[in-house]
Structure formats: C-alpha cells, structure tokens
Image (spheres, one colour):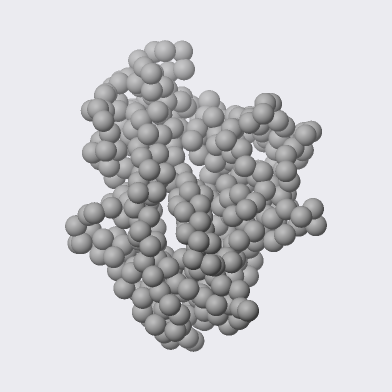
Length: 357
C-alpha cells in the first residue's frame, strides 16, 4: 500500500517540484492549496500573487494536471485570520514585532492542514520549504538545515511539534534553488521561472501601519520619542510605525545615527539611543519549543539566530524558569527585537527556540 501524502501547493516552483519528487519516490500524492486570503477584490489578489492569491490556485491546478495528481482547495480563512492576521495586529499594538510566517507555519500550514489531511487518510503532509526533517538517534525529530545556505528556511520552522514533524516530508531541502528550477523546466512546469513570493502575503503593498490602523479597534495615538533617561526628543506618529533596532525613517535630526531601543505601549513612548546603546549581550525568551532535545537542564553552548536574515552568533543558553531561557552571547548583538524568534542550532539541527521578550 502506497503511503499517502498531501502536498501544500502554493502555485510556486518549490511546492510544485516537491509534489513531483514525492510522486517519483513512489508516494500517493494529493495536491492542496490552502485558501487563506480574506474576501478582497480580485485585482489585489492577482497583483499580490505571493503564496496565496487567486492566481496561486490557477497555477497550482495546472501543476496538478501536469503531474496527474488529484487537487483540492481547502478553506483555512478562519484559522488564518485568528492565528496570523489578528496576532500580527495585536503584537504591533503591544509594541512588539511579530513574525507572521512562523505563526502561519505552526498553526495554519501544519496544525490545520495536518489535522485535515490525517482526517482524509493521509500519512504525511509535505511542503516546498528549503529544510530537511530527520529522526535523530535519541528518537526525536528535528529540522535540519537545507543543503543550500542562501535559501535555508529552518528559522521559521522551529516551532513545529514532534507530532507534526513525524508526519512531515520536505523533499526540496536536498537541493539548491537552481536545481529545483531546472527540474521544473524538465517536467514542463510553467511556474519554473515564477518569482519567489516576498513580504507578508496579507499586506502586499508592505504598508503594515495602514493595515494595522484599519484592523485596530481604536485609533492609533501619537507619542513622544524619548532618550533612555526620559528626555523628550520629539513627536512620533504612533508606536505601530516603529520596531526595535530601526534606524531609518525616524525623522529625527540628532547629529548622530539614532536607533529605536525600546517601545513602551503603556506610555506610547519610543526610546531612542546611539548605536552603542542598541547593543546587548543577553536576551530572554519564552513560549519555548524544543526540537532536537526534550529540554535543556544545564547551560549549553549553541549557535543562535535572532531574525530570519541574521547570520547567527554563538551564545550560552540556560533555563531561568519553566518556560523561559536566557541567552548570553560571546559578542554584543544589535537589534534584539521583542516578538521576534530566537532560534537555537545544534550543528545542522534546530535545537529549539522561543519568542524574544
């Protein structure tokens, strides 16, 4: 009996080739596009493209026809709005910088898609992520770096649970992007040269602040830029326009490069300081998820990333509570941003991670 796998088809090249690879490997493959966009005008969806516009459905359906696999569209609008869009707005209103892709991966692409796939008799779900899933000698499952460093997508996957990983296949992680595009051309997929989706899919124009204003319950208040010791430097447009570590677009002429050090939602203050003041050796995180190990019981040295495009840095990590860690870095790091994830690596494997406090 062939094992059955549901592949999340976005209409893009990576997931399309993932489906082809799995079919070649002898799996019984079903293509599914997750309908997560809300009811917006068609024009926006067409322009947006990305991973979830209407054009994605057309592209994915064509791919399924070429590969000769069954294809369905599943509606996850409700889950996406609750776990991704509402969370995104709420985090900004609380002075934090959310990571919607991490939330979408954990709660929509995995939690919801996996439950629905298992319910229709599938053994696995699969995606086009540049990462690999392996079972370690200790019996646990972990995400492993893809073979190509420049497309590595492990950072946004640290939050997956053991049960989710046990039912996950990621065939694309063994190849480079160029190899994947070559395969797509060889099989005759029209998406071979489709550009990669960028930015946040539900804010296609990149104007986060307008999106938040439209979806917030109350108007966004202005406030003051202040120094760490409380001196007022000027007025700002509202805390949702800023993120810790930001330097550009502050509209302040202070005679030195100014950085956002902290955002204080209770007083609507944005704290501004120098480059030196933006550096730190430590960070705290909670909402932990451990992957390659069940837990950490003593301080360990790991390689950590504090944002998606961070090249990473060495630190010592230790538990400071049931659901809290402190990471102490060898060298000072800049722009430790509350709300973003810190992801810990043990060699090529994701050890775990959490949300920066």
